Length: 271
Image (cartoon, rainbow, N blue to C red; front, side):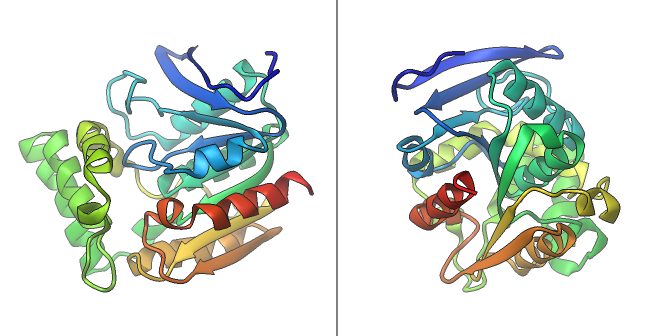
């Protein structure tokens, strides 16, 4: 696929019964953005990256414009990302994964190493399900239960109100602005089903140890502690990786610290 200017283009790629909606901008090294269990929320990070690279974002299966019944299979999402990269002739991409998108990105690197040049992972909650506490029970288990009782959208809405809580007692979702809140609300049913899929427990230590691509894992000091713990686990499990703790960052760190994350992405493109 030719890329001769920095204009934005959009389209869909048909993958196993779903038309994955994608947007790309810029030229050069491909950088694929994989969103979390919320919505494709990137702030100005996408445009920052597109100013020097070929930035590609997409709505994961059942989110946004990629219409499909909600699923709880993270491996299916990794397969979708691989198919999208192949279809867009974007092999050897830097993968930016936010939250559960970081788990999907890690699986992509483990299963399809030829497609991945580097990983930038934003608060991936690796194996949080293996380390339960009362907070996770309240936020995840009770949201799943509410979803079974009242419908996935209700469970997803409850989960979203919980997951963006900060250590200070503030709630990042409450202050993120109407546009972000509307995006997340529109994906409530997909969220309510996806939270049943766990936090990467299907990936073994050996799977992650086999990843050889350079990796940067970002964690904030204001988001809930299980995000920092999950990020630390993933950074420890991938050999060629480093952990970067961002002062004052919540789980929306891509909105709050886009310049810092864009700098990390740029550093990987020159390695």
